[in-house]
Amino acid sequence: MASKKSEIHLRTLTALAEPNRKQIVDLLREGPLTVGEIAERLGLRQPQASKHLKLLNESGILNVTADANRRIYGLRAEPFIGLNEWLSSFRKVMEERFDKLDDYLEKIQKIEKNKNRSKR
Image (cartoon, rainbow, N blue to C red; front, side, top):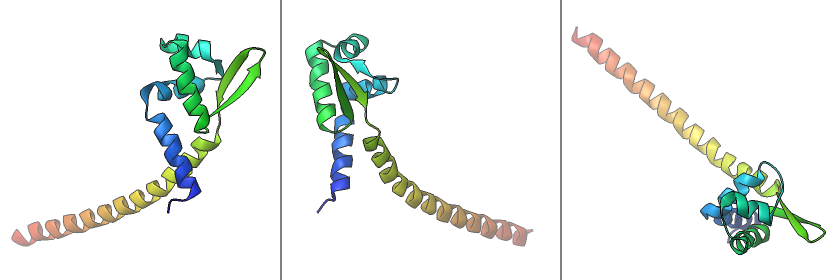
């Protein structure tokens, strides 16, 4: 059974998999924006942008603040911190594997070097 954390990571990754939503997140890295500003910068119609913002908000990536009749969208740090921690666990495993590969390749190079010396 999947843990709650892995479900959150899956929701975050699924939300970011769609190109327009990823572009929205990239835009919001610079700071909060309204739906109109997002739609204009990405060349989307406002209903399209609203649909993507709704999904990003439901996935926990965004926070929304109301300012009169405007909604201002910004990024939440927590989903990205969680993803980074999750990815870090893979980095450690891969670094260990690369270290083992380096050791193996050095061993083979020494063997080849010794063979070449013996032939002389």
